[in-house]
Length: 247
Image 1 (cartoon, helix red, strand yellow):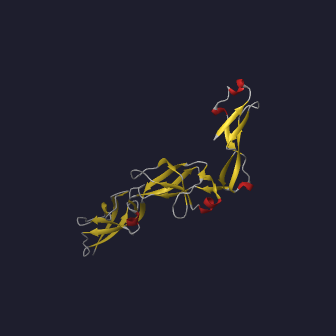
Image 2 (cartoon, rainbow, N blue to C red):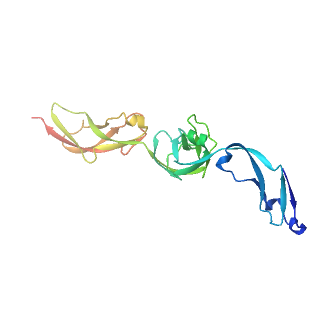
Image 3 (cartoon, helix red, strand yellow):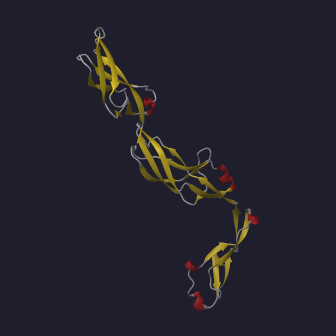
């Protein structure tokens, strides 16, 4: 494409390629499909006349549509260590405006981000993620958004479960003594670990050794933590043991 300018020399000398632009005539709904548009120059002084060669250009014009969609998210397997879970996700912005052809807009299935990390995380953090605009097959669509960077604050905490304690006594002399047991403080304990293991546990055993007792007292019971549990809020509890001699 070339453009020929004519006019007063002193004004022509002031015209640079950066001072004007060549563009098509305004596009209307009548121009949809394959259409030929006239080329015009914008930004030239009034004293300057011009001729663009070629004078027209053949283009494909498609109807553009806009759509506002909330930003979704998926949590990648790489994000967490196995004992932790995501408790909340805050996205900024929470919605985006999309612009594309009618075909692409109708094909949109997912507008969101894939929450991932280079290393598994175990504390709350904030990071930026690239917006994905995908169809039902997971393929990117040729659709623009008013922003492509989404900031996500991801709240993370360790999996836990509060479970009842159950006493198992060892060393009882049932022929000569009647025993009664009572927890001094809490009757529950909080366990931490993999969620699938926590879901299988009904109670936590507290082992109380009474083999040397001859009178009522308070002893320390040791928790028998289930296999695979990484930690507990306490590993021992106080148990009041009431002893009654059999007459």
